[in-house]
Length: 401
Image (cartoon, rainbow, N blue to C red; front, top):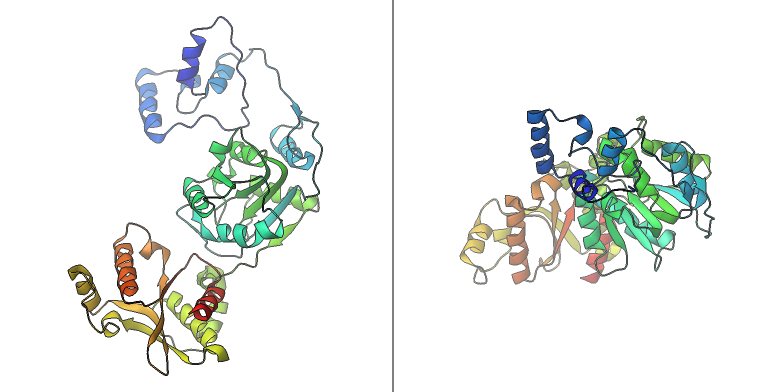
């Protein structure tokens, strides 16, 4: 409860009982309200315990009345004992009395680590979503289980909700999940390097204690020496001999990450550099590898094929589409063609995250290019540099075609 609403309630009462947990998350104060209320404090020199932007009703009353009677509701019945034991040791100074019992054969805690790499973009991590879909759910047999996915960031929440739309899987931010529970919780940390926001002790305490039977921690596989709450959780899981699983979901674009310079050079040394972008050089090497298989030997690949050389006429296009298609710089990153009939088989585009992100000028061009190719019946695949499984997807598409 926010401070202003709480004060209104107190003005109507002779006695009040305030129930809450200062070790969990307070009410959310948006940035505009925080700025406005902080300005009031600056102008009128109001004592700190009444600062609206940083105090809930509970925290304010606790500071204003330090001797107010307090009772700790310390008996815990919800989480598996090994799950809540971490919170008890880490956040509650061993004050909780754990009365829950393990009701499942599942490992109560385990860790999945993605491959090393720069997977997070704008507080969204597609690789972690891929790991959830391709590995965690099938390997941990979570189909039909009461499953929730929590994450620190709104952008990751939106991506997760879009991915699991129409299913029973609930995904939301840790803040929104407070007060809720699921039999199994997946905590998607998102960050390449754990941030203070993600590692906030109140936020982590809430995230962990949403899980009744099993908590699955999903983190980036990058090595880090930072001392964090999450690293303490990983150590606790390891000390209790629970599983740490290294993900096998990978991408050709993982080689763009700073730790892969030698492997990238080795991979690209076998071919003459075709593009100024290593993302395209990596995709070119992958396409060549796939086409070297006997079943695809009739196909060849062209890099940077002009779109205007592909269209026999422009009658199906709008004036704007025709101008775009005729422009000398408009090209397909790759065109796979049948070497016998010279006919196009599959167009491929490599989408770098920054250059192709939504609402950019390039994103508008992407939509136009998609429409043009669709009008002429030319199949198109887009590979994002934040995705995974490019080889498998390409082979599947060629088999389908």
